[in-house]
Image (cartoon, rainbow over all chains, first blue to last red; front, side, top):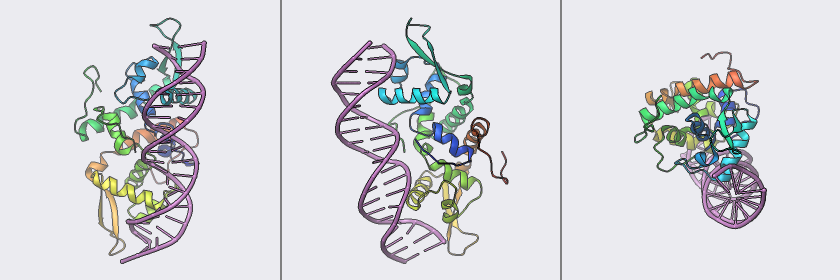
Length: 114
Length: 114
DNA sequence: CAGTATCCTGAAAGATACTG
DNA sequence: CAGTATCTTTCAGGATACTG
């Protein structure tokens, strides 16, 4: 990921956390309600398991996501956004809105709205 | 830059355009009124000239920025956001707001407000 | 000064095998 | 199934020399 040493710019600093190829997509999926590793892995962009594992660890370190016992499979772990992580939703929304308006062929899943 | 082949997700698609280390910072600077290559180059994050050149070309290809004759130095070129490029401002704003609130040590330049 | 061209390197990404 | 570990590859990024 990027690493703009010592920049005090809030934009550059945010990009140091979420400005890479995968992080925001993981956050997107969690915001959409996915909870399990395998669900996250099966997103259309096909993230590799090691990358996914790495991002989950980093996002947890940033306190943007947390692990919790899976409500579905006993004994399994699951992931969800923390309250801090949920505050990223306006960013996701601004990106999605721009994409929908300006990039041909993009669309939301049928069960999602902004 | 990322390259999520054939994703129809608007978020993934936007990230294919602006989701790299530098692009959004160039846009930030243009949004703040910088117009010349040297101004863009002198931002605190210190972008290399070849990278800056590359991003300016790509942003022009995406019709997010355009070249125009410098109003200051005759014969020189300058850069500015197109109207399409200006529509990225809500994205910049959502990022800046989040950074200011959640990342210690970030602040806006004295002459900038949201 | 405004870029372009090259070369180099490290980090991220990808594939995949492996373990509990 | 849920990850971790390794290995390889690719490419963005950085330094810098160069040109008009």
